[in-house]
Image (cartoon, rainbow, N blue to C red):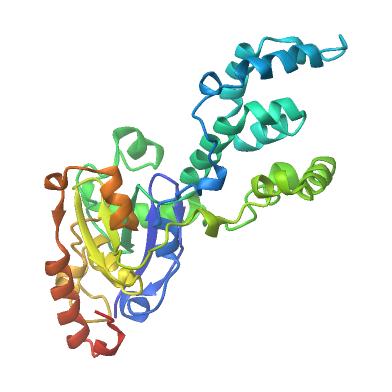
Length: 331
């Protein structure tokens, strides 16, 4: 009769929950592709220079800083700029903390530009599934891919003492209880620490009215999503195996992904191709979605990567033909 499936990000400890039987959702659109898109930082968020020391106006800024210290009631502002930069770097570990700190003073806002950009990018990457270990797991999964989980993770998930052939099933049901569903709340104003602090929420809303601060508070995830330009191609990458698949359009990447990350011990999948769909060669690997132009900027040596597009598309086309879904393929 088939089994039920869910897509899991091991590193994010997140799941899309029960998706139903594979044949029921395989050819349908899915949000999973939006989760694995590698975040990019628009140029308008990037300072002109890399660090405070590289700025030609640093001496002028330091002078302005010292002149601004007119009261002993603000000891923080009496610290040397260099020491403040150490504090700023530490606050950068949490974007909300750094943002609130930077908004407290014009001079602080000026010298936190690069760190704010780095912190925001880091936070977006943490929330994204891009580069995380991803698997489409059946509820009769059996053995998990070798080395997918570390010993510490096996212990944490209560799988270490189990026989390997039982770990997949336990992970499936354990993820439903222990893993969360990805959040799509407003990045800053939707943060629980902000929602539970009415004064902080009001202050951030007030600061948002200033165009200078607005884009740092009212963050639109779509602004940080890689997009394809004319002549470029989409690329889904396996960062673990250094393999990739390219397509002109993103629509069928959902199906491409499903053919590569499925894992189960039961070939009953409620559609054709069960014998190989349950043995996805990328199951549990680190995966993301980008465009060829960005990939070429990140990796100059193409010899390190293997293009498996032809093999994957050929298999997907056969599956579509056998399943009566040829009309759903765009390429």
